[in-house]
Image (cartoon, rainbow, N blue to C red; front, side, top):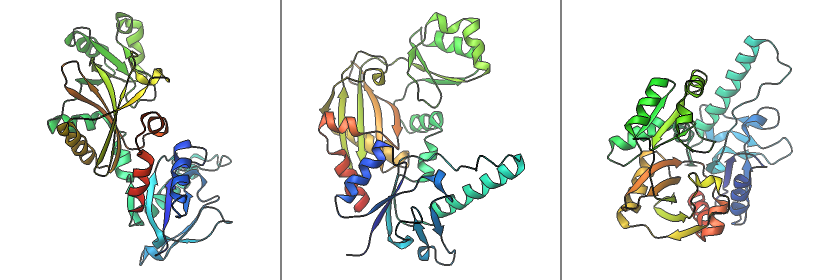
Length: 307
């Protein structure tokens, strides 16, 4: 068997990254972390534009030297970008160092001709959440009516358009969803939009679904909670469910439209049986979902990385 290595763009203290590394190595394949903020202080890289696969990677100066041609798969969990030494105080030099490090890392990633789960470009596309909703709506998929704004008048108009049935959340996420109330629409509250835009969406009633698409396989679970945002209910059961064939097909199509091969999709099934798409995450945290639903998410993910 030819030598094979899996590269994990993530942190050693990130549970998902560490779990994937453990599962890969249990199959007899070495895996190494690439934490971008450790380059070039610990990580060593060399690559030649004439033949990039002749280059080498070292996780630290004390780890084995890995020929780039042996890196057959990359699991991109998370990147904190690059880090300029704190002692660099000159703004111009700071900017030049940052750009230099960023260019070196991105050139390295672009030179790796292997399977990416998921690519740098697709993961970065995830940051443009409103654009992705627009793309899916244009392709005929049901998504919530959505407004991203820092204009108080438009925020009030959207609330009226939704007949008071609206939610509010940060544009990128990482905070709980709230139901819009008149308190959100006071002059004082809306004055904060001059500091930070928000995302407003129509309220979609129903049951939350978390769906994992891994290659051509689909694993779904129902999250049983009365919380508006299921993330606020840590103990909510995740119960494995079987989706209708047309919804499975739709989930695979959505994953492809998002340019992904591994995706954690959030949907809501309305009381009328309609499936409404909320989000497709290229780096989902899946350990709790796997444990509680019984779906073999990590095994299928490692199958994909080693295929």
